[in-house]
Image 1 (tube, rainbow, N blue to C red):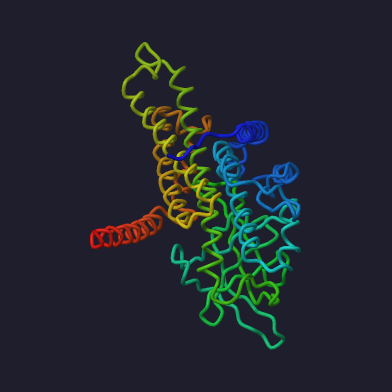
Image 2 (image 1 turned 30 degrees about the vertical axis):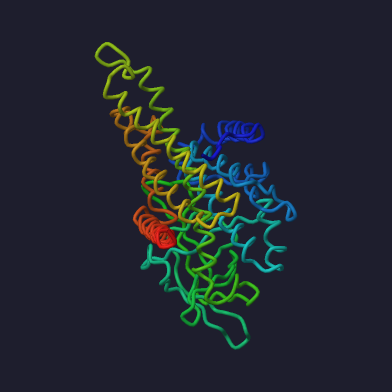
Length: 393
């Protein structure tokens, strides 16, 4: 059995995160959702308090947060605002990518800026015609006579793409996936804000257009051919880890709102919480939330120890936690009745955001493919070992 008890330091960190979101996010999250924008003042506050650079190594000016504390922080953000969670998610994806695959020059230039929030990063993978088939991206780069590269294409649904200043853009170069760092303000680059989304309305989403955007070879992360198998895999695993924890927070928010409402709302002469069918829904919410949290704790343990099974376990956590969030927020709306469909109560936002959780950083169906393949490989290895033991016996 793994011991998932939190240390005193981790408990205190969680309390600090709770206090931060309760002060700066919870009272305003519905307003941000209605305005369909996260204000720059809140982003600046996150940067000031060290949250945007939490995963940047200390030697580059960051906090160097361990995986579990990062997960606890993402849980609290998910409890308060899934849109704001997406900001730290894409920021962490860029940070982890540069830490693992960036050149010395790229690390020295960008990590200190990402640590302070001077630079806000976005992850440019999804395209209008590609969707989940990210290995077959259509955006392209060609090498020009002067040794630079010209990038052309469009990116879609880019979280915080409307306000980011640095973009990890995935393109094809001679039929090989490549990643480039593209800066806002480059000639030929444009970001168009997206409004009217079902959920994640204040995630500052944008469509990106790149028309003969010129970048140097120093802007390439890794080398040709590394774009998906190495760079995207690292970033997506980090993204799934952050989103999984955020889904736990979203489920927790739905549970707390439902407990409060059911305790105070009287129907047929007694509080809703005393009705058996409401108790059944609350029970499912409690169990689903706890189970999702334990899967995330398990993933954090593997992430800290460098276990090779991390990718499958992260996918498992993201898959289960996102589905749990959908179930819990659906029940929350049902418990609230017509009030659950009103902007007067936050459960309608939780419900809308939960649907997005099952799509971003790899849909639930993509996670099923990953988990099933990994499970089959694990089963095959175990069968071979058993057969070998039987033969020796």
